[in-house]
Every structure is written in C-alpha cells, then in structure tokens.
Image (cartoon, rainbow, N blue to C red; front, top):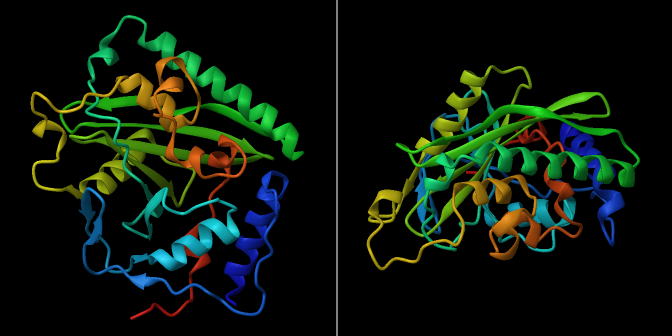
Length: 288
C-alpha cells in the first residue's frame, strides 16, 4: 500500500474513532483503490462535470463507497456523487454531493434587513457545536472565523463560504458552495491544497469548480417556470444547510446538509480535515 495512503487513512481513522459505533481498521495488506484518469465528462444525476487538468483523477462508485463507508464511517455513500482529485491547479479534492430536490430556491431573502443577524446566528451555532464536539473528541477544535463571508452571486446562481478552523493548532479551510438549479441546488465541497489563500484566490477555485459543471438541458436556475416546485426556504436557509446547522425554517424542511443523513454521528464529521486525496494517491498507477 502507498505510504502516503496508509498514513492518511490512519489519521482519518483516529480522527473519527470516537464517533463511530464500530470503528473500522485500515487494510494494511492490499490497496483497494484504483483512481481513474479524468479525461471525459462524468454524468451526474442532474448534469455533468468536465475535466480541466490533464492530471486529474476520480474515484469510481465502488472506490468512492469503499472510502466513505469503510474508511470515513458513513452509513451510505449515495450522499456523494463524485470525488475528483486535482480538478485544477490549487484544488486538491472536489466532492460533489447528491443534489437537493426541495424545489427552486428564491434568493430574495438575501436582501432582507435581518440577513446579517441570521448569518451571525448560524455562525454562533456552528462555533458552539465545534467546541462541544471537540471536547467529545478530546481535541482542541476552534471555529476561528469566516475565511470568506457567505457570498451570493445572483448572476451565476451560486452561494459559497469558507470557514477557518483551528484543529489542534493546525489551520484548515472548510469551503462549500451551492450551485442553484431549477429543482434545488447541488452542494460542492472544495478542498484547496493550501490554507494560505486570499479571498480572491479561493473564489477563483470555487468558480473553476462550478464552471466545470453543466446542468441538464432546461434544468439551470433560470429555466424556472411557473408551476415548478418552490423551496420552503431561501438562500439563508440553504446557507444553514451547507454549514450543517439546524436554524430557523431550515430545521424543519429537510434542507439540512446531505451528509447529515449518512454520517454515523451528527454533523461534526463535516469538520474532519478531509484527507488530501491528491497526496494520498500520489505515486499510484492510474487506472486505464
């Protein structure tokens, strides 16, 4: 087994052990993963994602499920549609989660007078949960600040944010984006290969990731028509869902982040410093 792979898998297992009902053990004898060259568009549930870099890889469904269930302790793997390694320079890993189907999300609430108060409440909930779960794990975990304040781009129909987390002294960026479409939204988790990025640099990586995705015909956000299902919450509720906290209307509508449905223990695993898959698979022979 690749040494980087073993080291990183052990790290993930140690980090998650306190939250798994039955902790898994890495297989030290064989390497079960065969990343595939990402040279052609991948079909997803409501669109497709196209390659940018000739050096990028992806995990097929079997390998993706193996990693999520056997190594990360998820109960199921259908909460993630794609895991792409090295999509573009600066992006270590891109995870595309299963699309939300609660309905077309209206964005007017983002202009509400109480928007910042709602965002502050979401942050406070997240920060308090980080402290509590860090104590449960026996580690010092601190939600430091918004690395990038929640930002809505109406013209390109996406919402994104980045949070700076201090995990036992190590600074980690947790970035997520939501690409709105006709039926709801698609969550993207962007894992940069550096924690020393400017806001502009991080936004560039987010937009590179989102621009590589193409919705199905007549399924883009602006293809909405009268009579289509409309979501019960707006952009602020989606932000709460992406961050992984129950807040306001989002707590009662099923808009809580998809990962929450599959993790064995609460939202905390969203904070795990996701293994740098580009390093994890470095030196491995790419599957043909």
